[in-house]
Length: 393
Image (tube, rainbow, N blue to C red; front, side):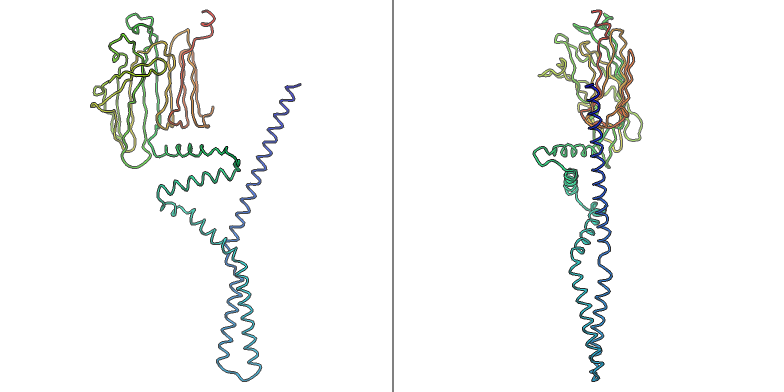
């Protein structure tokens, strides 16, 4: 009974919300219609009737002045002249008075014309970038006010700043696609390749991505970012835990160029360990400098890394460092005692089931985000024990 009441209550709330939305929509349509009618009326100003009456009055006065030049002595001609003058003055006075009465409409007319000019793209094109930014910020706040914001300290205006940060991403290079295939193998069964002091995974990570420059002109992008990893304290050759086995780059519409043998590794100690117990930082360099490339329209990278990682590190996370249109990860790990779980984390509310593909098998997982991800968003994959394995232990 209580469940039925709760369900009925939810249905009533949903119906009420729907009615409120419909009423808000009708109110908005009525306001829009009223504004459109006022705009159409303002376009008809100045009133043609007022103009005609004024011109008739001026014409009659001019006729009277013309007739007075003849100095008629006949009374009926003098009467016609005076009548012409008086009627002309009356017509002109009526036109002036009507014009004064229509001044608010005149102001509305010029106001609409100014608004039309402001909405013209030619006007906007002449503005500087800071001026456009100020107008955009004011428009955002006006849209907020239009929907009826609360008149207290809870204004949500910080979200406007967040929107501005998203907009700035339009001016920066982005990933057209980022595809990674991770082949993870458990090498604890092979004594010859055991991780020093513990068990390990051997991961072969193949990555292919394209960075696109949305603006004209040359761009410089850093391609290989530093990577944190774990190396046992008593292990002297940390460089051997990570190998860059392939690194090819294609700039704009050119051909791939292989830089694999030109890339060098540099290992630094970390003062503060990051998750889970990373104590080293790997930095790749090209000609003793950061791995950067200049390009105009796009740059495509094809690379492969082989990593030996502690088996305690069961989480793989890929966070994008720039806006990404499509992110795809294919992760393979063949172990009957474990399974893979994956998810995509995003700031954008548009990450729904329609644009997220997730396929989980017994020994692999495929996940693809088909919508935009912002820097810091990404994909998380975890190696977790199977339920029957937990029961057995």
